[in-house]
Image (cartoon, rainbow, N blue to C red):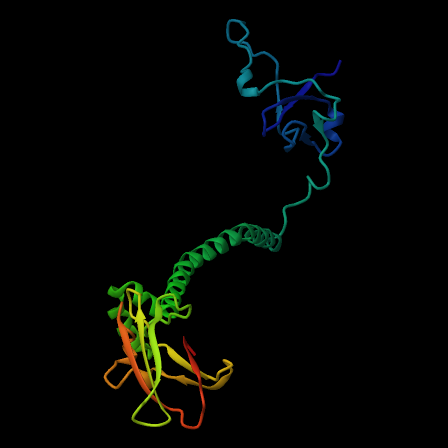
Length: 278
């Protein structure tokens, strides 16, 4: 009976039983079926025979050093012949550079999206507050008249900013006429001058802030209430020379009106008086 031989995988320390025919198949090159390590079976030969000490007693085998033995000699999954790829020589320097380059690309293929996300995150962190500030500034600029009216404490700051930007703070326009009203009006012929009419009225503001002077529309009608003539009166036409039209009607203020109208070329029986903003 031929002597049994054993070889040990240098990778996982597993011991295999082998035959000379198996070792001679590929010059002793085998591959471990456990960890797939390719090694020289002849160079890794071990002996499982007991070693005797001087008095003849069995010293035993260091199983921990040899690793777990196996007897799956003819099982291809236990000890396999190496393939051509396993026995291929190491790649040249050029290939090593290619591997390095691939590893570099693979590395940065994962790193690039993270860097981009961090870059976009920093950009958003800077851009979003800036856009919010610009939006607020644009809103304040567009509604500066209302801001100055509703928050009088902000008016000095807005005035300085408008002086630098070339704009102006103007009184609010009561387009819906919720705060302006014509308290009283009257149209009478001037007894001293034939064809001359005298219009008197009183425009009152009910707002707690300054309001822009409105335009007045005076319509003269005949006996059938048909329009004879219509005329629009600008604030400068009726407010008087001492009124500060640019500052608007003072909060809860009144504007007395007295106008002389030449109606010598018309015949009228009535009138209508309205307010509007152009």
